[in-house]
Amino acid sequence: MSAAATKAAAKSPAKSAALKSVDTAKKSSVTSDLSKEKQIALLRDMLLIRRFEEKAGQLYGMGLIGGFCHLYIGQEAVVTGIQAAAREGDAVITTYRDHAHMLACGMDAKGIMAELTGRIGGFSKGKGGSMHMFSVERQFFGGHGIVGANVPLGTGMAFAQKYKGSDALTMTYFGDGASNQGQVFESFNMASLWQLPVIYIIENNEYAMGTSVKRSHASAELYKLGEPFGIPGVQVNGMDVLAVYEAAKKVIAHVRAGKGPYLMEVKTYRYRGHSMSDPAKYRSKKEVEDYKENRDSINQFRKYLEAAGMANEAAFKKIEDEVKAIVHEAAEFAKESPEPDATELWTDILSQ
Ligand SMILES: Cc1ncc(C[n+]2csc(CCOP(=O)(O)OP(=O)(O)O)c2C)c(N)n1
Ligand SMILES: [Mg+2]
Image (cartoon, rainbow, N blue to C red; front, side):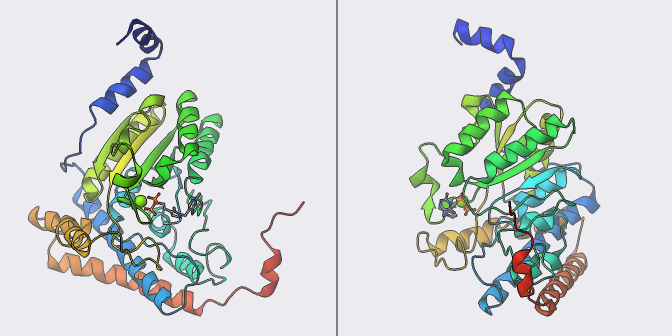
């Protein structure tokens, strides 16, 4: 370290510690002291997301969901592990691939499905659709279609939390493609400068629409993107829900202690196309099959729970039945809920 850098580090201990944490970032292990009940809840939460998304895919195919629809299948362990480590009152903001984040925040599956089908019973009265749902009660702030744009918004939300003296923090989720945006780095700068309680979560699913990380990023080590700003980073195996949970627990403790922002790169994979209209010709079937067969977060976690003696076939069936019933009820609610009345065109709009 140069003399000037040493002097600067001495002045700012939080930042020098942060840089050290970037250097020592490792893949997390799966050892956890989480109770059996909570581990089973992780499986249930992942399964709910998967079955919900499968049903959304079916309803889309039947013409009941219009417009864009981006499914989260394959990435379930990411939001499940992180939100399990969060506290009620912590805020969440994400991209258009958002159904899972709403479920993980505890939003009702019925209201999400009804919104997808454009019905009055939806979270935005059927006027927002897949990408535009919010819940102040659950501190979920969207659902954003413009790539990267939710990152400065999440940073602003963390600014508000700090300004108001709250100990809540903001989980700001975005993709590997979004992580190349200029506004992301402007946000990093401000978040570090003001030591904001924000966790930046890059869901690295290897592709931005059809462009692979290898083709679009000069460096594939996305967890280091905050390094020039003194933001510590960690890379986590996003196909392993316990690894995600354990990493998130540490990161959350760091940020809640007032030590400023943190960056998590969670390595994952999406099984379906970018959106429902994407035939995914930019990757091989073999690559997708390999993830599904050998690395699937739900199957792997099931095997682990069984081997650890925490659950058996009967327990899995019970969870599967419970989840299927929730999703069935959500789909029925969505189909039965009426479309919004034409007069709704004039409500919930900003006029000056
Ligand atoms: C500013 C902007 N540019 C381009 C698009 C079109 N677009 C939508 S999603 C996407 C890819 C983003 O990929 P990534 O950030 O990796 O997220 P993922 O879809 O993999 O979850 C693009 C280019 C957009 N919505 N907004
Ligand atoms: Mg991506």
